[in-house]
Each structure stands twice: as structure tokens, then as C-alpha cells.
Length: 125
Image (cartoon, rainbow, N blue to C red; front, side, top):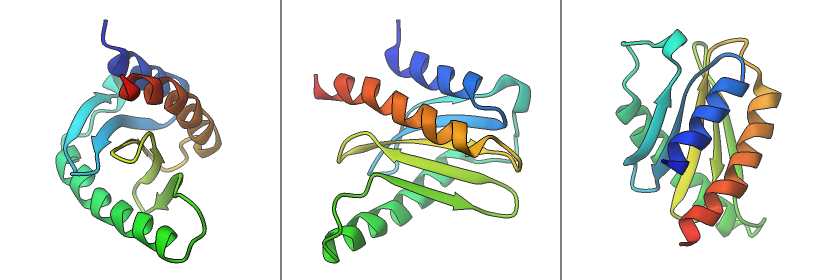
């Protein structure tokens, strides 16, 4: 039983329009991933996406600390082709889902919050 895989597979199955879910370290390395088998896209380089959005996330973490507005919890990014929802699990790890246009953004946010609760306990061990 792989709790990481079970959680991210559950998120992908519950959120319409999700291409994949990733658990990523703040160093940009993917810890685990689940790609929706019905929506595989060979053109997407998930390693590069994780690495590049990690650098953006680090900037947002530092900005939140610099302006003293509290710890960053979530980042949402929409491009012409994809949407990205990122939820911090701990200071060192985050959960990211990639949505196709029209994907269920609200349900994605909800499922990420639920997944964070489960995964946070796993990372404490």
C-alpha cells in the first residue's frame, strides 16, 4: 500500500479535468505522481513543470514572509492551456494538480485541502 499514490490517485479520480497530481519537494523533485490514464499528454514534461513551478512557489513563500501576511497555503495559476493548483503539505513538500481548460477548479481546491490533511500526517512520521 502506497499512501501517497492512493491519495493523489483519489484526487485525480474525483476532480473532473485533472491531467495529473504530483507530490513535489521544494527542491523541485517529484516524490510521487499519478497521471490520469484517460488524459495522458506525452507533450507535457512533468519534471520540468514541477521544477519551474517550484521556483515560482519559493518566490511566493518568501514574499508572504517578507510582507508578514502569514504562511503561504495555496497558489493558483491559469495559463491559456492549463491550470495549476498548488497546496503546501509542509514547509518542504507540496501537492500540485494540473487541470485542462474547463477542469473543475472548485472541486480541485476542495480535494487538495482534504488530501493535505492526510499527507501532512504521513510527512510527520
